Structure formats: C-alpha cells, structure tokens
Image (cartoon, rainbow over all chains, first blue to last red; front, side):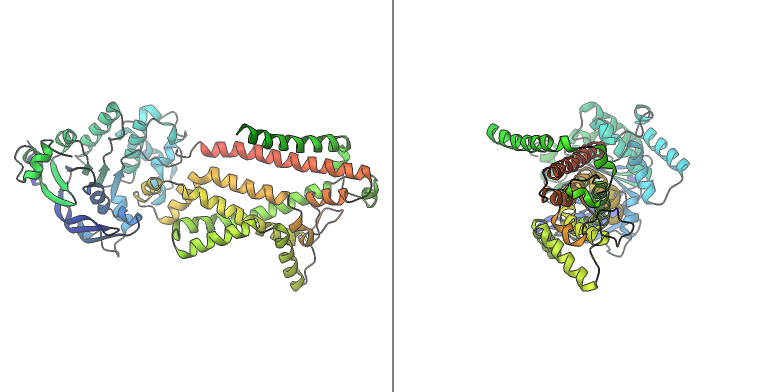
Length: 257
Length: 268
C-alpha cells in the first residue's frame, strides 16, 4: 500500500541534541524525513515532540537559554548553521500550531500577511492568493463575504483552517503541524485532518500527535520519541504491528502515555 | 468593598457638583470665544480662549513628541532588550520619573532654558510636558506589550518575518488598545498639569503665533483667576475648571470608543 516509502529524503536530522536550561530535551536524534509524505511524531507528553518540530525551522530560538547541536539538512542546507538565512527557511516551512493563533488583523490580512512581508504588494496578486489558499483550506465559502472582519471572530475550527491558509500562502514545501487538532471539536478536527491528508501530495508534512489512532490514520512514516530519545522509526504499519523495541510495543499498545 | 465604592464615587460626584454649582453660572459663550483682555482679571469682559487654544497646542505638541519617542522605546524594551540589564534599569528609571512631581520637570526645563537664553514659550512648555508624558507612555505601552502572547509572535516568525516586521505588524496591533490607553493617561496628566508649564510656557492673554511665543494654559487660567480677590473672577475659575473637565471627559469617551474599535482585532 505504502509504495512511496522509498521516497527521497527532504529533511535529514543528524545527531540533534537540544538543551533547554540545562535540561537535555533531545538526545542524539538521527532520522530522515521523506519528501511529500506524512511523518507523524508520537510519544508521551514531555518527550520532546514539540521541541523536535520547532528545531526544524529553528523556532526554538525564540525561547531563551536553548542550545541545539547537530545538523538538520534541509535540501542540503544546515538549518542549525547560524549563517544560514533562517527567514527563508521559515518561509519554506509552514507551521500549524497546537491552538489556533490568528494574527490580530482581518481574515484577509491574516492570509496576505506572509506574502506582504516577503514583498508582494500587488492587490490582484494578493486577492488571488488569499482566495486560492482559503479554497484549499476549505474556508472560502464561509468567509468570502466577510474577509475584512477580525479573524478573532471566527470559531476555533475556522481559525485553525485560516492558519492553514496563512501558512500555505507563502508557498512552503514543508508543513510542520504541532498537534493541530488537539484543541478542536471532533468535526473541525476531522476537517483539518482531511485537508492535511489531501495536501500530502504536494507537501512534506511533519505531524506531532499524541493520539495514536490519528497517527495510524494519517502517517506514512512514524517516529517514536521517548524521554528525548528516538526509540524507533519506520513505516506506520511496521511501527504499529511489528515494533522492534519493547518500549514502542508498550506505547502503541497503550501500556503508558 | 461597598464602602470604598461609596467613597470613590462620592468624592468624584462631590467634585463634579462643586465645580458645576460654582462654575456653571459664570459660564458664557464669550468665555469660550474670546481671549482675555487687560481688565479680564478685574472682572472685565473677555474669555479664556487663549488658555483653551494654548492647552491644545501644548498637549498636542507634547503628545506627538512623546508618542514618537515612546513607541519605539517600548518596542525596544520588549523585543530587543527584554531581559537585559539595560531594560530593567530603564524600567526602574522610568518608574522613578513617573512619580517625579511635575514642578521638578518645570524647574528642570526652566534651568535649561535659562542656560540657553530662551524665554518662556510654547516650545519650552511642549518639551516640559513631553518629558512629563514620556515615562507614563513608555511604561504603559511596555506593560501591554509584555502581555502579547508568545504564540502570536511565533506565528509571525514562523512565516519568516523579521523582528521588526513582527514588532510593527503584530505586537503594535495586538497592543493597540493598551497603547491608546497609555496615550490617554499621559494626555490626561499633561492637560491638567499647571506646575510644569508655569515656568516653561509662561502665561499670556493672546494666542501664540510661533513656537517661541509664551502661551496660556487652562490649569494656569484656573489658578490665576482663583488667585484674584474678585468673587466674579473666582467664579470664572470654576467655569474654566468645568471646561477643562469637559475636555478631559470627552477625550476619555473618545479614547474608549477608539480602544474598543482597536480591540476588535486583538486576539484574546
């Protein structure tokens, strides 16, 4: 079924160590993330899933006293290299956060924001991009008549789809999703999930979740993190049915976490 | 708790009543439309248009200058130097400056003006009031910017925004209601302040033609009228106070409306 498994590597993480105020959050993580597939990161709370995700586009820089060592090769560029143009890297990796986080502006401006900061000012171009991205996140029909309203007036589920549209607007190659459905009601969560599943044809998706069933539904590839260590990774079916490590087996069977 | 509400409301209402009862009878159209004349303080004809316009000039100028300085300073304190020693030292100093009595600003401004040989003028008054407003504005803005949630900044950075873009587009917009409040706090203090303009702006019966002319102000108009021995002029002092009060109240209402409009876009 998962014939794309041999797909080429998009992000190669090599010996990634992250220290957070003296706490060793990620220990020697080495893993390849395949292109145009969904890679789910599973593991109990506090195992470093979010830290891993935010290392990929160096959003961990925003937190103080964080140090990352190792290499994260994204199309051959080392993201952790301080010389690298991190703004361009971040533009190429969209982020969908755990709770919807629209910007304090109108629906339209939220989607247009990324394009504007990267230099697009042409009204027609912006209009087109806003419509296209809202279509993809299937929010367009609900908001097309109130694009100038504050984004905060949307429901949580709509806000999350708006955030998806905002991330897509800058034409990223990778989508980093940090439990994007965990704060939503089941119907909105299903919405987002289906959209992301459809988007895997065009985007490399890294998806953090603590819901095993969600990982099983979505993932092509699963990474299991436990206490900051990468225990096991591989195709979804293998991880869920024939895990090598007893800890993986215990976790996917629901013994802890 | 009820008692404290009664005390607060009671004192507010009694101030209003006293000013209304004493000032309203003396209030006239000519007070608003005419400047003072020589005989005005003896009970003659005239008004306090010079002081109303003077106060408007002073406060607009001072607020403009203070705003241009405070906004970048508050952003800098939050986004560029948030936990540095410099920032905590700056915050501490600003808190001290906030509580410095305004007469000190007046005397300080006056000393500098004497040194440069400038006489009491609109410019001097504007600068003294700007100094008075600065700590209030910066600290008020600083506090609201500190409340901007990290996840909001994160969503901007995640799109590849720079610090400056995030500061100007996201933080300022999110903090806008609080920024408006900060400006109003500062304006409220500046428009009612007599001590800092006493030496720096002077007082005159005419409306200034240039930045280097002396200028009248409402608080000083109240003060000078009340200081005369004539009951009818004293009554006009209350009327002037009433005008000042109405201006401050309408500013407050206007800012509430503005704040609410700005808050519509803010993320809760």
